[in-house]
Length: 610
Image 1 (tube, rainbow, N blue to C red):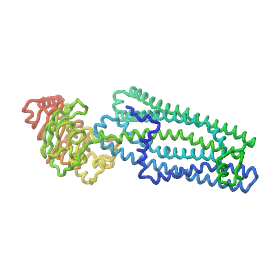
Image 2: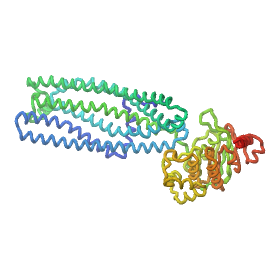
Image 3: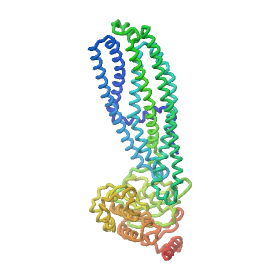
Image 4: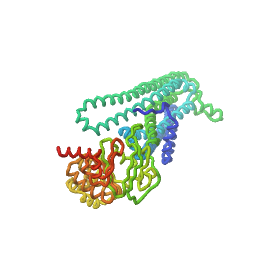
């Protein structure tokens, strides 16, 4: 879904917000700012020096004076080049430093969002915010605001110099097209703002589509969806192309307008200035009038329009329109950065998506868990849990069974604080989990999920998740639960890179590593969420043996479709449609001849048939 952005051509409030990130880099910012002032002053030096060279030395045949002023012109060029280098480096350094800080802030914010936020937000959209949008913000400083200020300052200095050094009537006639330029620029600013918002939205849609379909490429190929998905991609890609072409269209109009106005200004200058030079028309300049008012000598100041004056004036016109042409590109860059920053800052400002948490911490947890009348819904008016109540005593193993969609995994998600429940109470050792910090709450659990996620990293780092656990301790734990055999067969053993999502090893091996990851943390509470539902019988036996080992003496919650794996549980919770329909041990539930018995007999018949 496309995001709305401000309709203003330039949002001053947003710009001020962005400037707050300059704080730690004030010296660099003000240093770059000072250099822009120097560059603005130097921009007027060359035309004036060239005018002096022509009128005072070339036309008078003064070779020594010409050599001197030529040396001065070369020196000015060298200084200007040096300052331009310093400005470019400082502006880009500032931009990269600021986006580093914003990206760190955004990533930290994203890691604290509720899981419900990720359920509703395309991953590609978040990638766009954290990578390309933030990268675009750098251009606000590297190619936007500082460069625009530099160009604007140059324009002010050049116009001021034109009125000071040259005939006022010549300046007014030559710049009579400026009102047309102003109208064209304002139209361009407003039009390009919406166009760039459309471009960024289409980039986000394109990233989301590509990321989702590359991740699910096996499904695309399995169901022969290549042509169908390609047709969808063509539609999104064409929208992206059209959005960019619309922005190009505006530039295609605006840039020629500037060129035409520049040509008209030069033509007017040549016409009036040439006439004045031929007819020796008296020149009325602010500089000459000021000198006369002050009583200073004006013999060195020309009283008419000369060839040197006319050439210098045309150079001033070119110098004036050069930043005006570049301002279109600069404004393009600034608008792209402003649109991107608006989207990033909206994400940073979100408070509804952040995980709520308490401020208490508990330690030396015994593992007593209690649910009291817990209600929960992912979507309003579509309840998933409806008044669930149960308790687990320290050291007990609780198994939760039921049909798909009964609410088994949701119980785990609420217990871990992944989603806030709407009603009821969940306690850990008598403390409300909503009163605990999320980090403290989750530190007491180890979780093995059905869909194991492994990072593109070594087996060692995927087990420890960068925590300080010695390799010898991991090897000893792997040997106890029977994982060391398959790891020893891999190239590099624990240094073996499993690649993205662990695609280099089998599903069963991924679950074994996930189990080892949980085991080495030595948690007071262990949660196995359908950990044996998608593996072979040999691996299932390995995990079953490890389960018996790791659950001994600690609170454990096991969710499984295969009832044979949880017959030794101290308590079994039977769920159906968000309700606890039965509760008891395996033998007690069979004796009730109810829902659990039907599930057990169904699976028993399936095993006999197979």
